[in-house]
Amino acid sequence: MCHVHSSPPFNAPAARRLRAALGMAPGHVAYGLGAQYGLTVSPEEVMAWERGDASPTATELTALAGVLWCSPGELLAEPTTLREHRIARGMSAEDLARRTGLDAGAYLKMEESGRWKGNERQSAALAQALGLSLPAFVTATGKEEELAEHLRNAVTTRWQAYVRPLAKLLPVPKQHLEAVLVQLYDEYQSTMVATLSWGGGGGQAANGDAGRTFLAQIVDRFWELARLTGR
Image (tube, rainbow, N blue to C red; front, side):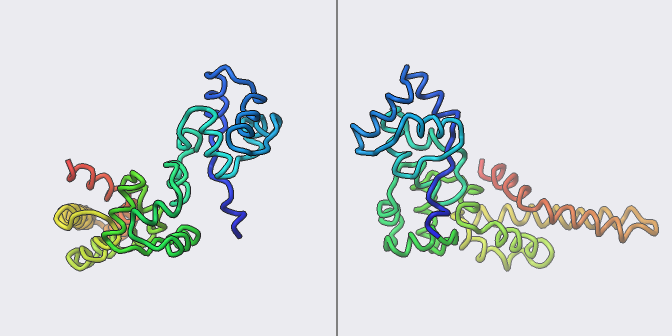
């Protein structure tokens, strides 16, 4: 099971570009990994990494960043999971657990399951420690579907009932959240009223289509409004 998560998403072209910029050959990189970090890596393995045929482990990636004079994040493709964001920041699980006020074992369990269960304060600390934008935070903590469900319910019923559940989900001030929900609710209701007033026998069907389209895109619209309202 641990093997599935053994390699972070490696950015092969970046590794090749950084090595070339330093005027190093794959052999020099392999030598540096051994001399500086005690890792046994052949020049062929370095070349396989750069071709994208293989990926370094988390330990190898951290060492490779040291040899290439860059941060681990520069050698990663866009991180999406908690673990990938942590590795991109060059942090240990213990360090991140300490920063979020969690026991290291409890944090690792969440990281491995892909389900974040921290409270509001811990969520805010996590987002700050990893430099996560709100969309990245939701993706990394495995809460995308939960967010979508709360938003769909908020605009189709009473938005006020979903301020608290959403505040638990997102490290966002409640006033900011309320302003976004009001706007989202108004937009959905206006969409429904507008399509109904187009009249004709197809009014009900058109209304259903417009409503479904709005709900399908609700998370993207939420982030859009959150950025505008936060300015």
